[in-house]
Image (tube, rainbow, N blue to C red; front, side, top):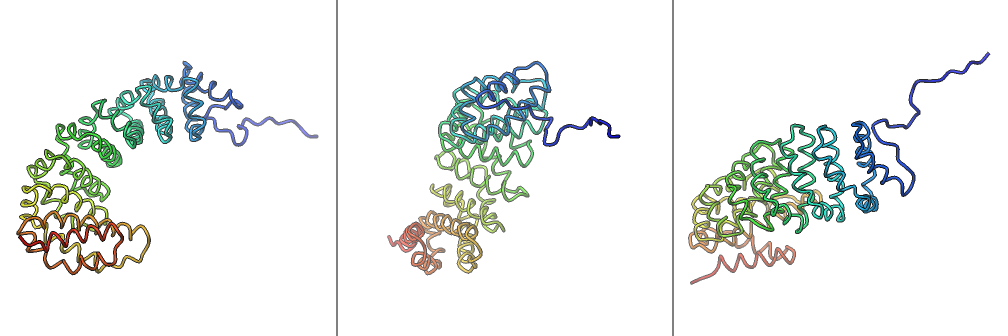
Length: 354
């Protein structure tokens, strides 16, 4: 005779870590109410569900209409670390959409998010940096970060944070320095970037060199680069095994060498010889591997030629660079329009006679 047996196991395909979603237009209002619930597990489950739901930009728009931005802002200061982490993750997902980035600025969420830079939970810190970095991609977002006076705090984080977070901070500063470099210079960012040029990870070395190029665009930045002696380190990085590090180092030298002081210091530290070796090595390298490698080599060559042009403006540099004219002529004949233009400019500067 058969008997009835009731299992204690949960039904299949049920995730107990996420809130059950209401149907249609009732979904987001219900989740917003759950975010304000006094029960910890209810808030956590609602945030986990939102991490899936808000990948759809239409849902981001609907969530803002029901006042979810205010609920998330409050949760950023929650006593539970998981709630703070997941609330920041929801905002990071929103920041991947234009409407989400605008909402973060509109509801003044940059400061509450940045408060988690000092959170004791690494996941919360990581997600807060991801959210801020995503917002910085737009001009308005970068300006908002600068207006919030976060640049000094970000520079300080480069000294103490994990390598993964350092990469995010370097990216954030890259976008912010396109808007304003004065705060970064005042925070002694040039010294910090220079110290990161010797990092074991090529991603951090490359991004540090790129940020040195950014901060060196104003005259004060070029002077600071010479003063803190970042040029010798950049010259060494011209022989780095990684394409991107070599390209960004050449770009940084190009930016610094615009001034007479920068040219003289670069020539004195052996930048001319290093750039010639880099250009000759690039000329003999087989680039028929894949599109990414071809583009990387092209970027190295482009920035190398630009740096050579800057150093050729000095008489001592022009004399040493005369040997690369045939290589530059070959680049001008075979390269694209941009490469042809910079190569012809370099030839013109090197062959100039007073």
